[in-house]
Length: 228
Image (cartoon, rainbow, N blue to C red; front, side, top):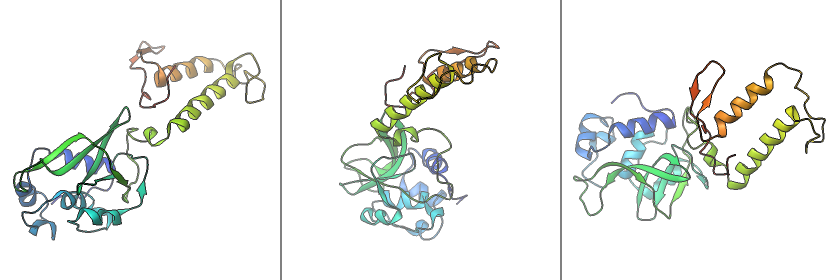
């Protein structure tokens, strides 16, 4: 019932709206479409994920091992990826906080029957495998998970290149890029604006703009590389 999610954000939002609910309630009031609505009182983690992803065309699924058909396996997860555990359990990556992956899943509750388990969101355990399903809108609308998809080395390289570009634009000395420095210093106010943007991205303390607006610093703190 309702519009099927077409993006990672929508899938996670729908799953979060069902936190604490069990199979019977979801099947009766939400997952009423065939064949999800006629599913029996069985383990329902794969059933739940396939319902959340029903817009991608992969169809109904109730077996965890068959979730690999929803997309390619990937080594670095982003929000909305399928996460498969070796104990025949599956969910979706709901968020990534400082490198820690969280999962939102149905049929959550060890030692309980399928009629007693609920939708839960929790830190994902290891080992696990990530599968990237197809979404009609592929990327999350928030930066959560996008930067974390980079390896440590890639994140460090990104920071290094950002600093090198900044130096090439504004410092008075030659830079590692091999060009004369300060090529944009003649543009009034540009250095100050760039410095403010850099502070907003990487500093851990609040940043005050010229008009007095105060913004929280460190909006890219999800980068695992050391921030200045």
